[in-house]
Length: 193
Image 1 (cartoon, rainbow, N blue to C red):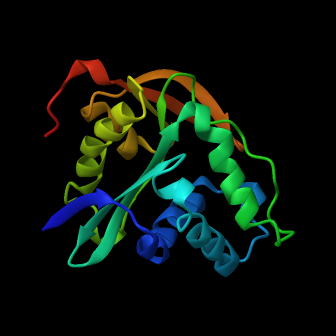
Image 2: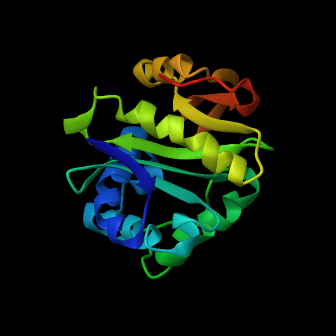
């Protein structure tokens, strides 16, 4: 049985490898010189902060048999700089980390920064369950739409977002790759399958 719930500090160590999968897929040049253990340590530290869990951002996990098997992380667009500042603070002592972050969100949206599912649990609807939980958090933050970026080369992910009624509203460069920027309007009141 899969449970979707807000993350807590104890989940950070299980969240980090999932988020790190995203960084690996993005192939960001600025992360090339950072040793893998340092990156996981920084991610873990960030997901132990109140700002990442339920302050400036919200982290939601999918749990199966006491194990975190999926994660979704997002925030209102106005909090993007504050969220980036958390990662800058937890990496301040490591010169390998840069301090510049690119803006990823559009105005007036709750931005889904990251969503990942453990490869051993992919294909079981966990990504869809995480997506279905997000409107509640976006509404609590006073937002009427959810936005996200999906790599133009990741057609499988794009199909998932299309199926959940996200619409492409633009194209956004992040690092040296191009992404579709997609949004879901909360007033559609669709029932997710």
